[in-house]
Image (cartoon, rainbow, N blue to C red; front, side):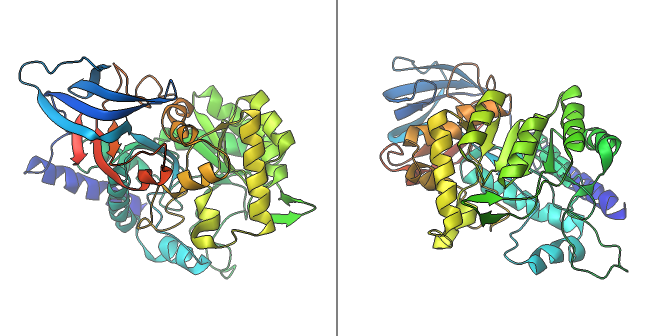
Length: 426
């Protein structure tokens, strides 16, 4: 509890600094701005429009079209040689995690770094995400940092620090003994990376507790490790059907959605039968599960790059199985949304590497862009607020120098970032 109080004091200090000269609230421009877009990606229609103007007032888009004129006193932003897109959405991040290539690295963060220190580093991660062009993120658990993601989100909303719009899951849920760290003497009571909860009533109580402390989403571990056998990726589900159903029902009853970490075939099936809203990773996806996802209306956030980055395991049986599952799900119309699991790998790496893999594995560049814009916003129930460059929506806008339809890796080189009508990267 002392660490939690210190984290609260830390952000109070940030707020005091803001009153003495830093930004006192989230930047709110009342200026009128006209963006001249050489090319504009219309994600709703799935096409690229030439020579479009975007009129912005305050934090909202007012009008879009080729003949929109700049009103008196409006500022002009010339992006006439660029391609303009809606702000990108990463539906799977960990701002409070700083990569853990080995179990020891993970344990060091939980045991040797205070929550306050991890929150300070998270503010840097959030800023990096915004500079990468991601104007909204769903941060799927704090990995032992309690409810500090709510503090980071609050600091962004109040203008203390720059960052994306955050939708947070606080502490993920898992049954006793089913998550790290697990390598210490049984005589020691070590901090856990999740909130352990058991039994139908236990998980219901945990869901209520997390919502009480500010969780937007609930996340749970439907499984842990996976193994490739019999031509597929398998695992043992963590929770019983009764526990999973109780968890999802309670979250839905309270108006919140549920994300399930599910790697193997059995865990994906268990989570979908429980009624989850998104499947995270989903390495064992196959035709039968894809059909079930379509019937259930669930979204899939596959996080491709983290499993095969730097060419590792690129030609393994597991990666080949994942590619087959991705292609099959795409064909069957599964709603696939963009997510990276960054934080699980270093924040110094590109947050946009998944786009190239999605295209390599069968998506068109437009489909990949839609997964990180309109479809990503819809998964968050935010499609009326952002996800497309349309009148009435937030002015969350990014631009690249080249053509991402011809070369999707252009999204790894975002040149311009605007969030809520405020320019953060020119």
